[in-house]
Image (cartoon, rainbow, N blue to C red; front, side, top):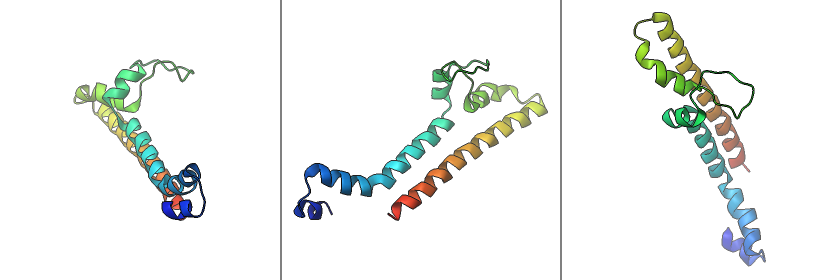
Length: 116
């Protein structure tokens, strides 16, 4: 397709824009979706970057306490309290559902872009 577009008179940049990007868009979209899903599930990197504080604030730039950090920090203490155990397992289930919804969302858009 690259050679066909060039032989029809397209410039190099037109060929990149109309052929390569259009055919590579599902791969670009899937890489973006997998990156977001992995960032949601990442534990130690998120724990160090976000700030690891229990304060709830309005600003998105202030330190926070994401679900993977909650599970990683408190997993050793959950053996003694059954309610705490179930709360951490619910947090893990919630994290799993969020990542599953993100993956399904991007899978839908990848399926739609492959038909074009």
